[in-house]
Length: 190
Image 1 (cartoon, one colour):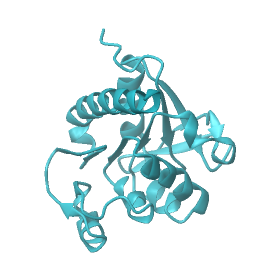
Image 2 (tube, one colour):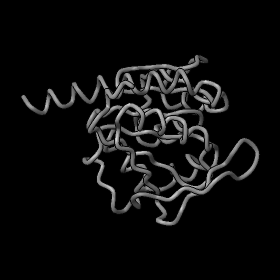
Image 3 (cartoon, helix red, strand yellow):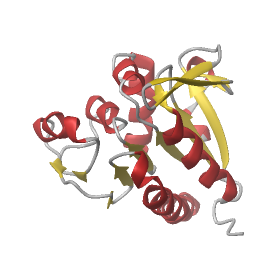
């Protein structure tokens, strides 16, 4: 088993209504690559997933957003689902948390509706991205170059369209997080 993310901490930011497969499957891929994932939410209570057309499972929050420090994490995962990023993008603490990753140049992975939050965090201008098709106008209006592709990597950002793209998204995310966190570590040691 490839453990290229051993000892790297990855924040997974969600609130109620995240698409279950878009959190569970990427988190599993990160864990299998050796990462230490932390489920972070603005609420301390368990968060409830959305599964296709109805409510899914509930998941325990590891750390409430108010207690989480972005400096403690090497990378960030932003699952989609319509309700989840729509709520997060209106939460100043959530956007501040995401913006800390943006400002530090840390790698970020966002799938489906997840890139919505990146607009509010100021990350998409001039970037090539993909997402669920309904976000393309929002992303273009924010200055992104939106494309309809399975998975897009642009510098320290990986984006994907939908649950069907999760295998490609996971592979690109693990590869990006491994390469970017090594670069960040090397830069900090200089």
